[in-house]
Image 1 (spheres, rainbow over the protein chains, first blue to last red):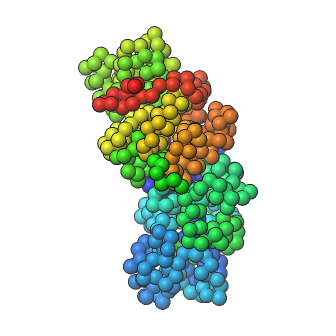
Image 2: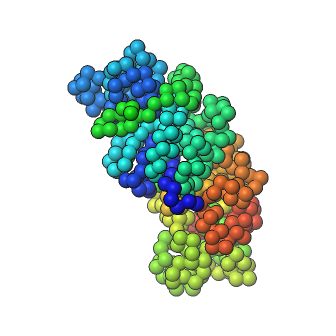
Amino acid sequence: MNKTKPTLFTTLSPALLNLYDISSATVIIIDVLRATSTIATALFNGAKAVIPVDSVSRCIEIGKQIHGITAGERDGKVAEGLIHGNSPFEYPREFIEGRTLVLTTTNGTRLLQMALDKGAKEIITGSFPNLSAVCDHLAEKKQNVILGCAAWKDRVNMEDMLFAGAVISKIRKHFSINCDSSHLAETIYKKAEKDLFGFMKKNEASHYHRLMGFGLEKDIRYCLTADGANVLPIYDNGTLVTK
Amino acid sequence: MNKTKPTLFTTLSPALLNLYDISSATVIIIDVLRATSTIATALFNGAKAVIPVDSVSRCIEIGKQIHGITAGERDGKVAEGLIHGNSPFEYPREFIEGRTLVLTTTNGTRLLQMALDKGAKEIITGSFPNLSAVCDHLAEKKQNVILGCAAWKDRVNMEDMLFAGAVISKIRKHFSINCDSSHLAETIYKKAEKDLFGFMKKNEASHYHRLMGFGLEKDIRYCLTADGANVLPIYDNGTLVTK
């Protein structure tokens, strides 16, 4: 193990984030289905910024203040009082360009808030649609990394672990990785990478079933496809923006 | 999914145990390297009982009271003040038969105490050496199951997840499993089952490196081998005993 390389750890649930020192690390917020996929998509399609907030009431409040688009879900559905949902397909260029999205979700925005409260050195969001942008940034930046899976109400989920594994498989040579979660994530990803959708289906991923139940196969397939919205959302003073 | 089947969940870290209702469940304490492997081995070799305790001072105190054998480790080494360690090879029949082992470990005994405090309906310990006994019991008992990985200071580890996967691969048909951790564990196990030791080595399991560093390859190989000490340790009023 090369001691001069920065470290990389994966936290499979927000409940495990406090086991790690994040003050010197870039924390990647991973909420594949669907918050961070939607954030990448909105920014790729020209949104001015995405403001992640941790409650519906705060979403409505900020939306009014800045004339933003309020959006979010609770338990996979549009939250009461908000106009838009958490599907990347709700944010095509003709709708979102030049506008600001105020977004609240069950898991992803909550984890982002936790990382912020715990003093992360840098926070970015990751998803398959912006996989390469995330990997390029981490490889160039050369600082410690925490791959933070948003999971589902603290329960480990398959798709966020798959994304962590995808990142690791691409950038492992740049990091010192003494972390079983990371090695497990990479192993799972390598087994799944040829057909992520089929892997989720075959292995009965809970989120696969939940979203299929809502008729959202198109969302799942998009959110498991690499580089469809290849931007790097960086958290800066309350908002996610691209460099 | 058959609604009449009992449920099965896997918790990859003690820090996730509180997400589940364990009051109607059998909780399997899994600490493959090495606490629960050693517990099975001591009981298989005729120990009267194993008393799991959560501190070194309590281990010494109870050891004196009952003239038991005090044993335990902290960070993989014999804890200061205790005579014996956490290796299954320290407890052959000629030494342990008819005697009581008072055991404290970094992770396994702590998780057992947590399950007890949270009111688990039944607590048993599981490891590869007693894999079949655990599976037979769960399949016969037909009540809800929590596979509780002891992990390493709350960080997810490979070997406990592999054991959870081994159990699931054998008894899945008896249970309703809506749990990504369980499906991931089974997937990992199926990839690894032909050579668990080789899998741990190849995938750089942190505990593999730690124990190999102490010269304990023999322990690792034994603890990854099925049914070498095929008994069912059940927690009953402060002690682990076999039925």
